[in-house]
Image (cartoon, rainbow, N blue to C red; front, side, top):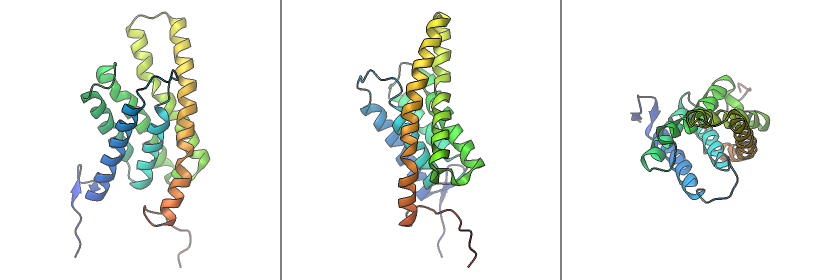
Length: 189
C-alpha cells in the first residue's frame, strides 16, 4: 500500500514539492549567474519563463507556478539580489500568476508553441509593472519613464518569448519518455 505524503497546504506530494524547489532554485541560480552586465535589459526573462513553464508542465496543478515564483522571489529578496527590495517579489510572482491562469484556462499550453509564446510575452510584460512603480516613486519625468518602459518591455518580451519557445520540445520529449505526466489521450481504448 503506497501513501503519498502531502506538503504545502496538502496540495503537493513530496515529489512535486521537490520539483517546485528545484525550479525555484534554478531560477535563483540563473539570476545570480546573469548578474553580469550584458547591457541587455530583460535577459533574465529567458530562464525565468523557461523554468516557470517547465514547472507547470512537470506539476500540472493550479498554484504551481505561483508557488515557484513566490519561493524564488523570497530567496532573491533574502539573498539581496536586487536593488528593488521587497518589490522584487512582484518580478517573480506576477509572471507566475499569468502562467498559472493560462495553465488553468488551457491545460495543454506547455505542448503548444503558440500558446507558450503568447504566455511568455504576456508574462514578460507583466514583470515591468513593479519597475513602472519604482520609476514613478523616484519622481522621474514621464517621458523618461515611457522610454524606459518601452526598452525594457521590448527586450523582456524578446527574451521571455525565446525562453518560452524552448518549453514545448522539452515537454514532449519528457512526456514521450514518461518522465512527466502526459495529457489525457482522446482514445478510450
